[in-house]
Structure formats: structure tokens, C-alpha cells
Length: 482
Image (cartoon, rainbow, N blue to C red; front, side, top):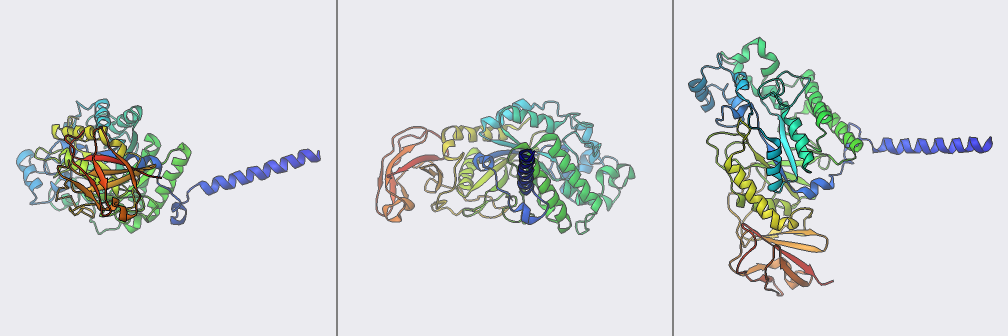
């Protein structure tokens, strides 16, 4: 009997200890607890993802994905275009585009196959943009793509296909900005004033009005529903979640989501802008910009192939694959990821311009992916004459050249990537003998080809090759004498 009691006591102690450890592993809705978060390796290894802005705004295809706001701003180009094309917003409002949004050619299998061919490792569709139209089946609003428009659970179909084809699924919510997004329609005769549509256009408050607890709770409930229904490993938020009133809700969502990641035994990521989360609690994202140097914590750029709009418009112009590749290299060398956006047409087809840029990027990554995927920053991000853009909304206006090099590392290998195809001697000061970074044992070219080089006191000199295995940029693998 004594032995049994002793055994039971030991078991109870072990159980209590295990429960304590388990409790300590769970996240609480406070910054101290959330600061224990660590960015998962899958995200740090992936480097390149696809963002998708697709919604009702692809029907008018004018201006940008902010058409639903701008069409209610008296005097704007969108307002004038809308009246000339569809009539006054009192007779034909934004809601009237929904039946025209049919997505009849939407093929998630083909989309994801294209993203894979582009070399992307994760996919992030917009679940709900500022316009308040959910691209998924939701129990919280009738204004969604399953009950209206396409009559398809777009996010659900993409989630299933992304996972089936072996990529990581994420999603974004821009719901919080809907608080003010349609407020222009309250200032003149428009359908925003019609009480029948309050459940869609509302609340349409001014930006300086503090959000109501009901609205913020609705935001939290929608995010929880998305996580529960689609199990995304990344959730991306736009800038307005930084509102002070939303701070408790941000903490609650982060604790809920990070604990879901523990339940799933999968690393999860929250992307935020500006200062919505303290450093290290989530992953910083910079819109249409990047950093000028290495950041110790992982970060991300979200950029669009489209130059004028994130969503589809008939007049959008597009970045080419060279721009994407050279900026991806620059971002990765500084400990960042690139989330590259496309804006499909209302029928569900992806534009030829974006397709060509994606395929060109993928072709480069087929040869040079070893220097990108799974790498980490070196002691320095790189060197060269071209100044890197830095900050949000800072496109790389000055193109990189082959004299600009970036460094990445993996295991014992150092990758030296020239941001062009050298047609002269490539001189790298950081790898001269006097720099003290090691004696070079050998250099090879990713994709094959001879490399003629010499490590001098002041610099490493690599002679140009007669031909290169890829366009846009060339990757050298440097090994050192141990």
C-alpha cells in the first residue's frame, strides 16, 4: 500500500510539473509573454512568397484597389469615371459591382502551379480588403464571395490547393480599415446613406473617430474564424491595426494565434507595419520598400509587380523579372523576405505581364535558388556603387549593376551574388586577404561554368565569364581554407 501511495504521489508530481511546463509554453495576452515568440525557420528559409489582391475592385479595374473609397470622394478621378461609366453612386454604388464579379475562369490549381514555377514558397491571398467584401465563406457577414458574386469560397479553395502542392498557406486581413473606408459616401447623395446597406458600407466613420468595442470585437472574431477555418501559417495585417484602442485586441489575437501554432505543431507568423507590435513579437513588414542594412530580426517587404495598383486595372504597368530578382537578392542579404503581389482580373485570370515576371523570376531561382533559400545574412550585406533604397514606399529607383554584390551564407558556404552579369573584373573588397574574412580555397559558379579568380591583399578579383548560366544576376559559391 505504501509503495502504491508513493507511486501515485510521484505520478501526481510529474503530472503537476508537466502541466506547469505546458502552461508556461502557452502565450498570454501581454507583451512580456508574447516577447518569447521566435520567428519559425520555415519563414526564414522561404525568402519568397506571393501576395494576391483580388476582389470586387477588379470589376471597375480603374485607378487602384482603393476604387471603393475613391468613387465616393467627390471630384476624384474615380468619382468622375464612375458617374460617366455607371451613373451616380446613388443609383449604382459599389455593391452593384458584386454580381459582375463572377470569377468564371478562376483555377486555383493553375494559379498555385504558376506560383511554384515562380519559385515562391508561401502564398498569401487577401481574405478581406478595406472594401469589406470577404473572399471566403463566413458566418459573420452575408457580404462574401461564397454567398454572392462568384459563389465560391476563394480563400478555402486556395488554402486547399496551396497545401496540396506543398507550399505554405497564409492570408491577409485589411478589415480594420473598413471603419472609415466608405465615409465619403455619407457626404453626398449615395447608396452609402441607404440604411438597407448599413451592414456592408457601415460604419463609415471618420479616421479620427475611435473605433467602437463592437467593431473591434468583430475584427477579432473575423480573424479567429479565419484561423480556425483555414489554418494559415501566416497572417498579414495592414497599417491601421496600430490604433491605440485596438492594442488589447492585437494582444489577444497574437496569443490566440501563437497558441494555435503550438496546437498545430507548426510555426506561425504575424506580419505588421510600423509599430503595431514591439520588436520581436511579430515580423515587421515594409510596404513597397526595404531596409538599407541587415536587421537582426527577420523582416519582410511586400511589393507589387504592378507599379500603379495592387489590384487589377486596365492601365497598370509592371515591374520586370530583373527588378524582382535583384531586389529579392538585396532583401535576402539583409535578413528579409519578399512577398510579391499580383492582381488578377475579375474573371480569375492572371495578366500576361505579371505571368512573365513570375516565370522570369522562377527561371533565375531554378539556377540560383541555393544562394537564396535557407540562407542567412553574412557579416556584411554587400558592397558596390549603387545606393540601396531604404524605408517604406521606397522603390529601388536606381537600378543595381553587376558591380553591386550581395552576400548570403549557408553552412560553410558563402554566396557572392553580382546584381548583373559581369563584363569586366569583379572586385570585392570584403574578400581581400587584409579584410580578415578568411583565405579562399575555391570559387564555383552556380549553374556551372569556369571561374578565374585571385585573392589579393586588398580585394578578391573575379574575371568575367564568356557566358553565364542565368539572366539578371550571377551567383558564386566561395569556400574557405579551414
